[in-house]
Image (cartoon, rainbow, N blue to C red; front, side, top):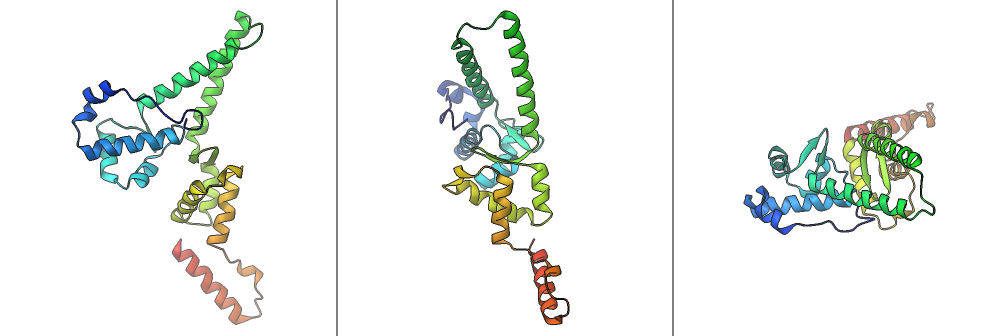
Length: 217
């Protein structure tokens, strides 16, 4: 949501009277940090990403166990931020409908709402299939598997982090294609079939290089 709304509502009284106020200052700080990461990523954040961003694995597990963070498969959900997102989208929809000339008939309006519900379901399905997302870019699990066939998870995650922090990433259209290019540059894969098999020494060197690459994955 950060692209459309760079801030979220913070209810002081709810914070001070809520269960989170009775936790340590460190736990409160980590929770706020996760909230910011969650909102900045359009309410799409995995548990692994939350731990990586905070470097506090035990505290993240504690927040999940005590329902400050809701676990949904491999992702987390933060109730008040999800409600805030729904509220923003609902207001935007009402403004869009109100601004149309002539308006819609009752039958058309009902049909339109059904279409919106269907689109929302499709978006939720897409979110479940996403491995990593930030700003306007997303890497789907099926594309992640293609990368995983060539590189290690650590190599892929490191490259994704670099792409996310790259100032000019707005020009990229496909996170999969971009990650593929970056990985080839940083972790090149040698195809032995391209070498002359009659040259025994060259073949041995290429083979050894391939073993080292696989060992580092």
